[in-house]
Amino acid sequence: MKVLVVGSGGREHAIVDALHRSPSVDKIYCAPGNAGIAQQAECVAIKDTEVEKLKRFVEENAIDLTVVGPEAALAVGIADEFRKAGLKIFGHTKAAARIETSKEFAKQLMEKYGIPTAGYKAFDSYDEAVAYVESRPLPAVLKYDGLAAGKGVVIAETIEEAREALRDMLLDDRFGKGRVVVEDFLEGPEFSLMCFVEGENVYPMPVAQDHKRAYDGDKGPNTGGMGAYTSLPFITADDLEYAMEHVMRPTAKAMVAEGCPLTGVLYGGLMKTADGVKVIEFNARFGDPETEVVLPLIDSDIANVFEAVATAVTPAPIVWSKDVTLGIVLASKGYPGDYAKGYPIHGTERVDGTVFHMGTAVKDGELVTNGGRVLFVVAKGATLADAHRKANEEVSKIECENLFHRTDIGHKAFA
Ligand code: AMP
Ligand code: GLY
Image (cartoon, rainbow, N blue to C red; front, side, top):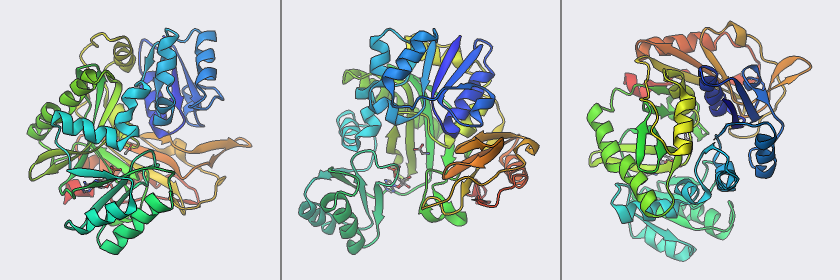
């Protein structure tokens, strides 16, 4: 099989790496890819949202299957266009991707089908939103309805903070013209459950946990994710069964009933509350950086799974390693705020483990930083303590004067 992976981050590197281990794949392309991906795939200079160009590339090169990483490509309808042209693609249609791209769509779906989530109300009037928040207990959870690159959620501890956030979102249109969803505040450990979904068929992957804050001790600003690990001691087999039974399978069914079946990854951002597992958010794609710790554990042929979902057949049973993984992001100093690019990186070849590239480039034959999140070092172990020790040892082999990382990834599992 010839496969094209769409995207350019650590998540896509992990997808390419899993395909690289697949016996049924003999050629991998990645558009646009990055310097690390280029070691395992042929990178093609087409952006993830340039659907027409991607389609032409697939047709001209007789590519058998396309796998989509980023939601932006799904949101512009890459899967719809490919299917219309009779091309096999792993990724949701634009209508199905609304489960991520519209918080209100996701909320209404959950309400209609009784899928457990925080109670909510949507507003486009600033005055009405403020009045509602004032009538309720704090903290207030305020979410901009639309793609806001992970920055559209504010947990306001005071009325003043809530007012300021609502002013930003509804009066100053900081993310564009949109609505705001005000949610009940939930408490409990969070975990990410990703499933391959084709219609009503749902195949779970191992659970993982992301670390959104920039610095150790969960301090500092929210980021795209600073590290992740699998094997969460506080999530039991019963919790997982509950999540599958009450969240993931009913959601897949609901999307079929709504006429927009899923054909890709459904990512559940879930919380284990005193009142059962509830949905914090859905994504219509592989999570980042969760994918970078989950996919190294797949022991079966991932190309078979992608193809089965793309063509609506049953995949062969999916086998996962019993090992656990833990991964640490190396980010540019200043991230998630302003940062400089182009700093030389040394030592990646000395790492005993996997190094996924998130934002790198090659300049004058030298590997350099080229993004906010730059590298992701993953270690595998029989236990989480093993993986934690190894990942921290290996990360210190990478030399670059402009990178920083967290040293406490996995701390909730050790608490
Ligand atoms: P989201 O982008 O929806 O995943 O929200 C970002 C983060 O905000 C989540 O990972 C949670 O830590 C927090 N959060 C979102 N919604 C709620 C809620 N209803 N109650 C408590 N925390 C929340
Ligand atoms: N790790 C969170 C996300 O992929 O959105």
